[in-house]
Length: 545
Image (spheres, rainbow, N blue to C red):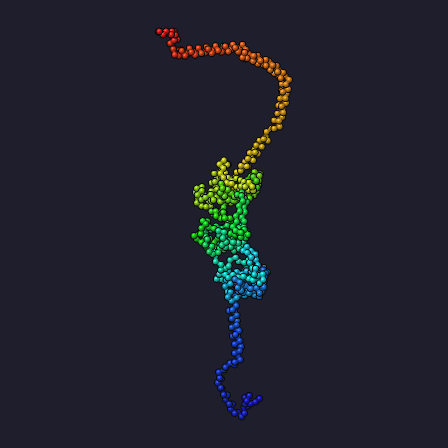
């Protein structure tokens, strides 16, 4: 080893030299380290730039992925590209298709919780034909920005094109009806037969007894929707054939094809108070029903008839002297174990409040609109009865007429029963049939056979009598007639004008006439000179010459 590399050898006890310590100078890094440092800074900048330049990523679930393709299907808003489909996969339960979308940097508003996504492709619906441009370019995903302050990265795609855009001005309302009728999403909404909105969608009520229809009325026509606005089905061709005859109502050609809904205020004027967004209204079957005064809750009643109900169908009116108080809900049949016979129950919904509030207050002394059962009870106690009548001779349709029958048997309404049973009376035709049947039963009791036998015996006796008349009485009558002829001949001779008897009788009559004249003169004289009965008749005096 060289000497300068190790410790010097220790010779002869010579002292070791002291080390010299020098101060370290300031160290400067080599320029080589600047290259990786600069590369790291550039990478961090690129990552930051990429993060801030990229938009949000959302996942939308659809029922199927028809027309969608990863890396090619675009997301558009008003025909402007705002995103691109990155991946398509299936959900864990295989019930949905999950579409991952990379939105553009300026598309952060589309992650609002109420944003909507749907697939745009050729469709033919109630609102018309849409998506024809996708026949060549292919399907794409449409998006509508929401207004919610909350954000979300997972959405459920719509199966149909939304009828109203998020930035469209207007007001949304909810209508509650018994049936959907012929309306569909996109069906028009009319005000005085002018299309002012459209149906957004519909769903079944929670209780399953009706449907809820969401409608959108465009601005500025929503100012005509007030708290007292009435809504009705204006769908298709409303052709009714019932006890009232033929009725044909149409709203427009569009409504005839795709249905529609109409609305109007009760007064027909612009409402003073505009209905708030989201207000709920009842949906009537037709305009006449909608414009009628609100009836309140119906009273379920039942009528029992002992006759054929052919021609009476659900929906038939309950008529009280021309006022419709309700309609038939169902027609059935049941066996009466007491009378051992069948009877026909007819269940109806009645609205006694249609008789007027003043009548209701007069009858029940109550102002409650739900006092209908009490009104019905008072009317039944005064002779109100139900009767089947023919409403249309051409169609044979029947309806139930309510009227007062003073001679009807006494009846009382059981207020604890459900449904309330209203007594009935047979109609005039049934009464006539009953009378004819009664007469027929009485005729059946007449002993026509015995009467025929007696009549035959009487004819035999008369035949025997006529034979006796011919053999015994006729000869005697002939001799009697001969004698009578002789007598009449003699009398005729006596009564002839030239007979002596006639001359003597004429002379006697003339003398009798003269005698009567003398008696008349004597009577007149005595009246003038009654003293002549005592005195003699004075002699006539001679005139002096």
